[in-house]
Structure formats: structure tokens, C-alpha cells
Length: 127
Length: 223
Image 1 (cartoon, rainbow over the protein chains, first blue to last red):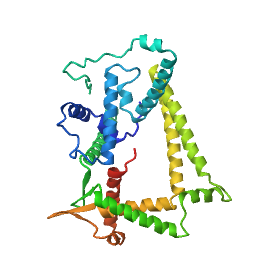
Image 2: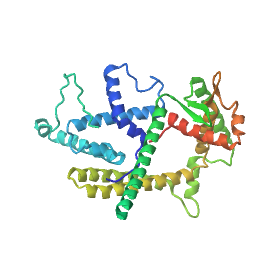
Image 3: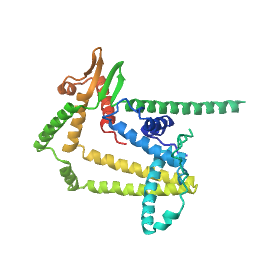
Image 4: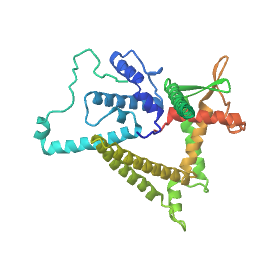
């Protein structure tokens, strides 16, 4: 694989340490990611954007999302490409589903189902 | 035997380079972690502690006032030109420089990157890693082209009123928000804007450079 420079902010946002912290902060509410809880700086807001995005990608990965891999998540360029690809594919699917609603409502998704009622975390970090 | 030693040496060299790289990465991550902890950034410079922070309401008001004042002052000077005027000036030169066309080119390049992105993921989907890596190189090349164009536009427009105003505000922010830790708490490092402008010390320049870097993370940071 090509060795590329990665944005340290994105690297930190996708680290298992911060991903766990983010999930716990969302679940418990009393855990904070930053010392300040309001008046966030620009870099903090950007960090929140990335941490939420990577959280969503890790969830998609755990659900067996089509062509998403850990290698893609770990590389800024590949991840950007995936997001563009996802946007285009989604838009195409939406258009198709408007034209042919039966095809998409009947076909079964290949995503793994998540049990939302279970108390165990739905995402397992492999690293 | 000699061959084995040589191989071990090379391996150790490679290992050392990898360790150094990893340490550099950890340093970078640590720096960023420090920067996101709070909406103020504390840093050490020549054994002293400094910090930059977000402006409060009063300071924001002060910034707005000095910005308006400076803008009017710049516009009053007939020597100064706005961005729009400068774009026209470049366009009407004997050897024209077409900035709107350059901006259009940036958008076209972005469109190419988007198309490549889809092809990269499609290649990965079918397990064609080599093909994907080739396309990734192409995408990186286009990104570089895009950045070069952006940089060139920035350079061409650096003298316009808008850019002068931006630079002025950046300097003013450093004067306003750089603080030094003393025995009785945090205090503004520069007592006045003139004090800031008159600083000619080389160390002070380095301090200003670092403060500007941290301030841009707090207020502007662009991915």
C-alpha cells in the first residue's frame, strides 16, 4: 500500500481511544471529550465532525457495508474517495428507487442487522 | 558471516527509521491532542508559558471596530485596489492572467478527482489493488495541481484590499489574544498594538509565528 501523509486530526478522530470515548460520551452524557463544553474552537468542531463521521464508518464496517474496509478508513485519500463514491451511489440508488420503487423495497439488504435492544455495544473495535 | 552482518545492519537501519517515523507520528498526535483539549491553547516557549484563546464578546466587538476602520482607511487610499479590480487588472494586461479561468480550472480538477474517486473504490471492490494505486497516484497529482493553482491565485491577489485586511486582522488577533503566564496569572503579552508592531526581536518573531499557528487552529483551521 502507498504510504501517504495523514492528517493527525483525522488520525486522532479515528483512533480506537477516541472512538470509545465518543461512544461512551454519547451513551452516558457525563463524559466529555473536551475540557470546555461550550464555545468550541474551530479545531474542536472539526474534530467532532471527523469523530462522528468515523464512528458512522466503523458502524457501517461492522454491519458489512459494501466495499468498505479498514484500509479505506485508515487512509485519508481512500476515505475521501469512499465518501464521494458513497454519495454518488446513494444518489443513483435514490433516483432508481423513485423510478422503480418495488425493486428496492423487496430486495433484502446485505447489511448485518443490529440488535438495538441489547445492552452490549453494537460496534466492536478490532484494533 | 560478513553478509549476515551487513543484512543485520540494514535491518537495524530500517527498524530505526520506522521507530523514528512512529515517534514523529506520536508527537504530531500529541500536539493535536493538546490543541483540542480546550478552547485555549497553552504552549511553552523558551521556558515560559504562553497561551492563545478565543476572543470574548468585548474583544470581538473591538475586532469588528478595528476591521471596519482599517477597511475604510484602505479603501480611501487610491493606490489600493479591491479583489475585483485586481482581477480585471490582470485580465487586461499585455500578457493577461485569467483568474476566473484558473478558478474554473480548480472546479474542473475537482470534478476529475470525483470521477477518479469512484473508479478507485470500484477497483478496490473487485480487488484490483494495483489498478487502484495507479489511480490514487493520479488523484494525488491532480490534488497537487489544484493546490498549486490555489496558491498561485493567493499570490496574485495578495495585494488586494481584502487580503491586506485579512493580514491586518490576523496580526491584531495575535496582539489581542497572546498571553503570558506570570506569578499572578495570565496577562496580555503585548501591552498595545504599537508594542506588537515595534517588536523586532528574532525570538519574539518566532513566538508570534507560533501564536499565529495556534490561533489559526482555534479560529480558522481549514482541513
